[in-house]
Length: 195
Image 1 (tube, one colour):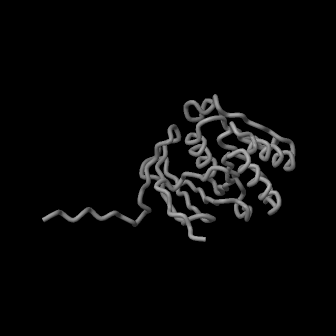
Image 2 (spheres, helix red, strand yellow):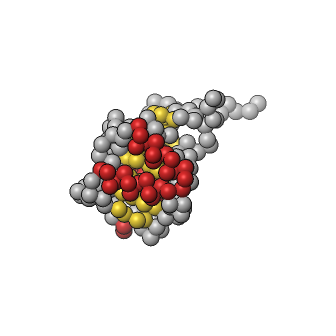
Image 3 (cartoon, one colour):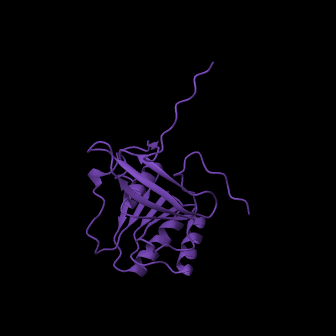
């Protein structure tokens, strides 16, 4: 099977599939995806996790579309994710499991995403990925040139249908707009003047 060509937008997650993001910047990646997916959003966090998205701190219009679920255990979290993925009106389901998924659980989630034509994004612990997911992203914050810089390095480590790569992204956290930057030490050469 030939790999699909790289999309013009490297962060365009395939619909009807489950994806993963790991690293300290995984929630920023999830927020960008939430801004880019119109329609209802479901974010599933274990009930004991103290950090929850603050509605007033989310990008404009996202809080009105967000449903936050707080299941008690890992089995309930997976059940919530599977049911939310099956719900056709939902555009994006974000979940934060604490344990690595078995291959069976990962396949169940993929089938649920296909049924609902919904995109799933699991925010996983480092190296806790499932072989069943479509893509896996490594997401880290990057020191910027100024104190309030909003730079991220997002690396596509696994992709079942295309290429992998690394991008340095300047994203302000408020809209779907972002800028791709060259990595440190990789300068773009100016174009040669026409004669």
